[in-house]
Amino acid sequence: MPAEVYSVWLMPDAAWVREFRAIVDNLAGRFSTPRFVPHLTLIGGQAFDRDDLKRRLAPAVTDIVPISRPILDVVTGDAFFRSFYALFGAEGALGDLRSRVNVAALGSDPGSFMPHVSLLYGAVEPASKAAAAAEVRAALVGRTVLFERIEIVRSGDDVPIEEWESIGGFALA
Picture 1 (tube, helix red, strand yellow):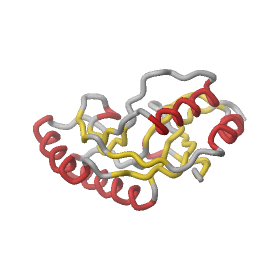
Picture 2 (tube, one colour):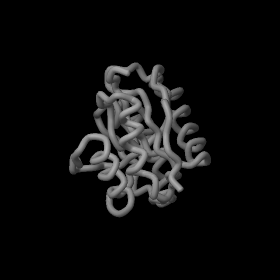
Picture 3 (cartoon, helix red, strand yellow):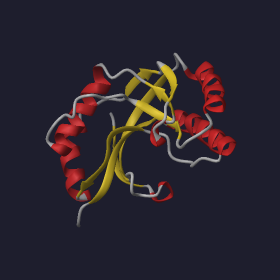
Picture 4 (tube, rainbow, N blue to C red):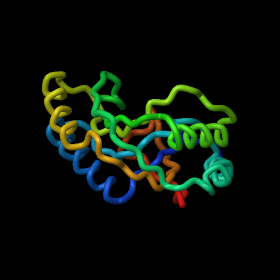
């Protein structure tokens, strides 16, 4: 199979997926922005052969257990895919997993890592976005998220969000 663009995501457990999705849907409705599946990106939008990527990742994640991380903050920014997000610390098991996945799939660790789960994509008027972030920050900061699955997703900057598609993954156990 020829190379296509894939991302590797770390997925929260079902309860957190529902909670994050409710926030994404609320914000998307409020600001007329895209809806998407909330996730924490370990590798974003790279050209891979799908079967080769699965083969490379399988041994790298077989002995990884689910990872619990507290939400440190809810942050806003100017980047399309980082307009509004829940921020996590990169140290410990989360940073180790990200490094391990990148070495397995890409052959090297890219270094800097800002683990986050985006809650809003796109440009939004700053004052309204700041007010919404304050509301979400009050509800989320300090709570702990359980991440329990790695997903391989056909996604990237040039793949329309509505065409993003999971093509498989690995449960952390």
